[in-house]
Amino acid sequence: CPSFTFLSTTVILSLIQIVIYIITICFGLQLNATELFAPRVKTLDNFGILIPFKCLKGEIWRWLTAVFLHSNLIHLVFNLLTQIIIGSYIEAMIGQVKTVLLLLYTCITSSVFSSCISNETGTTSTEVTFALVGVYFAYTVINYWELDIQMGQTNKICNLLFVMFMITINIINAYKNALIMSYGNVSALLFAFFFGMVIVTPFRKGDGLLLRNGIWFWIG
Image (cartoon, rainbow, N blue to C red):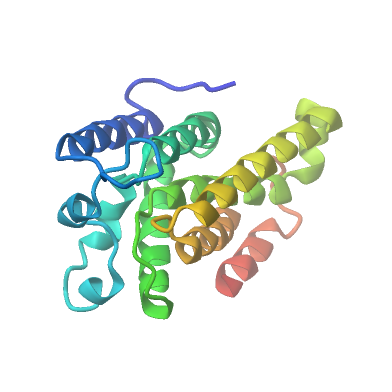
């Protein structure tokens, strides 16, 4: 179950995204849109949507501003649900400072990566979801056997299945929506996993865990 305070990173980020989404739709909706409450592409461009050729020409703030933008209401709702449920768990586990560093690191690096290998234009808010999932997987890998003791094998499997379900929903949504960047999402998942292998504190100290985390980090 979600567990957070109103000053947590998860809540603050979600509130900012909601406010910015409301502002963008106030500038007007797409007249021929088949999606629910979709802001105009021109409006998203003005607010800093990720456009690779503009980023590579100097508008590097788009690598960060695109994180706060959403292409339609369904996109916003699914992202908020995942952020609040998984994000609150991750933030309680690694702390607020590490959560902020995680999101900044993964969202910026995955946006840069996507800009360099693809001409995809879109929002990068779903990268937050995949970043949180990536750290959750790292947490599970590091503490796999300890989780059986802490929560039981059944609960552990249910948690993993739920996370996979949320990933599947987001992938389907990305496939149907041209403004959701698939390269950025996949790279955010991978970058966050390797980052998590370093920042997640294992339950059991020693046993070569530090060396293993270092190896995972450099592979990443």
